[in-house]
Each structure stands twice: as structure tokens, then as C-alpha cells.
Amino acid sequence: MKVLVTGSAGLIGSEAAAFFDSLGFAVDGLDNNTRADFFGPRGDTTWNRQRLEATLDHYTHVELDIRDREAVDRLIARGGHDLVIHAAAQPSHDLAASRPFDDFDTNAVGTLNLLEACRRHRPDVVFITVSTNKVYGDNPNRLPLVELETRYDYADPADAEGIDETMSIEGCLHSLFGASKVAADVLTQEYGRYFGMRTGAFRGGCLTGPHHSGVELHGFLSYLVAQAVTGGPYTIFGYKGKQVRDQLHSADVVSAFWAFAQDPRPGEVYNLGGGKANAASLLELVEMVAERSGTRPELTWDDTNRVGDHICYYTDMGKFREHFPGWRQEWALDAIVDEMVGAVATSHRS
Image 1: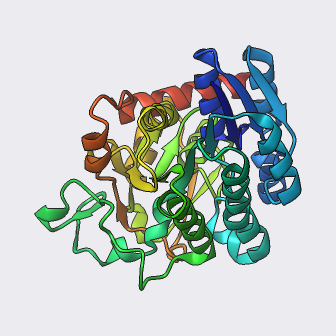
Image 2: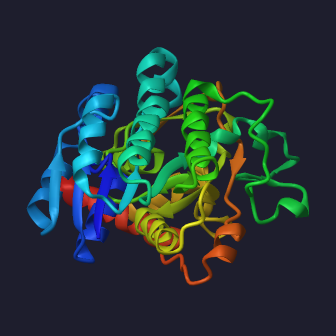
Image 3: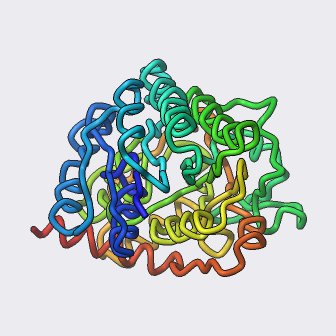
């Protein structure tokens, strides 16, 4: 099998590249480090690309921008790929507002370029798009919530397991980032439903792990850990720090992709997250990180929440578990935080 991973120097892309390399598959990793342009030096993923090239046996790096339609078409035409993991994206709400063309051209048009090239040259490929829970806009904020001492939670027992795929993506505020990802998500569905291609869209929540180049505008747990270990500043935006997210380790993300790739359901959509057991508020995560690292960030507070930000979001993965009962989530929240603190501390000492 031959695999194409876009965004291969990012968190999910690098995890996917390493996973499929370990299975003995040839892996083409497509990444042009646009993240450094989007987020500056802290977003630079050169270190991760170099790590992949130095440690993987079957990995070939491809310097290519997914916005370049002709280059994408040439790559797919000659590549012979059986599986595409499309993880390249512009991932920030705030950046999308200041650079809307870069955001839409990367997220929506880049996805279209890849899908159409596959339809023309590799119609039997399995194509997985890393989508986002931001396709639901701020609709999750309309669910009844209860405010507890350190977090918000769902008030209705019907929502006890979190957000499932029946949540509407209509009639809500998405942010421009959310809108561009809706386009990519729906395109992925349509290439499955309309053209019969073996596509799937995975609506990720907080996907995390030690190979994340976290910045303030994206990758909050990675960024929080880095700021805590170095004693740097960290700003909490809105909701008193009680906003809740569920964390899913990148290794569990990629194992879910592999489960789908072996038995794809064309045009299907799945929510992807750590679930209730891996959910914690920002306040709670600050304390978890401080307990494990022995240090804490210099906290500042901004009462203004980010546009379209969720107050409480954790993922109901019941649909995916029903379709793929062999999949297992291996990483608990404590283990995720321990690993990330250890990785950042080691990097900081070196």
C-alpha cells in the first residue's frame, strides 16, 4: 500500500506518517511549512519534518502547496496512492478573519484540488479529510448548560455523552475558519455520495500530542504546556476559564483512520474526540499541568471570548464505535498530559 499524507509535518500528519511507515507502507508526506507563515517561528514545523526524514524508513517528503492545482494533479497522477490522509489546513479562527483568502484557498480549494485529482486519476483511493467540530459553529452553545465550580457541563441528561453527528451545522455563527472547513467537509461527503468515492470526514475536537507546534491561536493544550514549563504568559479568553474540551491523542486519531481505511463507508461523517472521560475545563487543565510540571504559566484574563468559541464541547463517538467496534481509545487524559509535559520539559532542557 502507498499512502499520501498532507500536512505531514503537523501533529496529525506526522503521526499518520509514522504509523503507516511502521506498517511497512510507502509514505509520501506533503508539507510546505505554511504553518510558519501563518503563525511565525513557533509554528515552524521544520523540526518535525526533519524528525520524520531521519527516523522513518519508507518516507518521502514532498514540498508542495495544496493550493497549486496543477502541481496537486501531477502528484496524484503519478503517485499511485491507495490512501490519502488529508491533514493540511489553516486551523485558526482568528487568523482566518485577517487572512480570509489564504484560509479559504487552503481549507476549501486545497481540499477540492485533492479530491478532484483523485477522482480523475485514483478513483478507488480511500480519502480521509481531517475536518473539525467547528463545522457546528456555535450551535453547541445553545444546549442547556449548568455552571459548576470549575467547569460548564450539559444540563440535559440527553446530552450526557456529548455532541453527536445529528447536531446541525445550519443557522449559526461559524467564523470564517469554520465556514471554510464546512466547505471542505461537505465536498468530502459529496465526492463519496455523488461520485461514489471512498471518502470520510472526521470532525475532530481537541486533537493533541507531543509533536504539536502549538501557538496561542491554535493547539491550546500544547501551547499551555509549553508556557507552563517555561513560566511564560498564558491568556484565558472568556467564559471564566470554565470552557470544556475533550482531548484525543494523535495516536488514537490515526488508529481511527486506519479502522475506516480498512472498511470505508463512502461519504460518511464521524465526530472524533476524547469523549466525556477525557474532557476538562481550561481551569482544570491549568491545574493538571501545574501539578505534573511543578510550574505554571503566568495567567492573564480577557473577558472577551473568541468568536464562535464553544463553551462546552465533548464528543459522542457512539456512531464511530458502532461502525468500527474493534477500535480502542488507548490514551487517557492523565497520560496525555504526562507525555506532553515530559516532551516539552526534555525539549526545554536541551
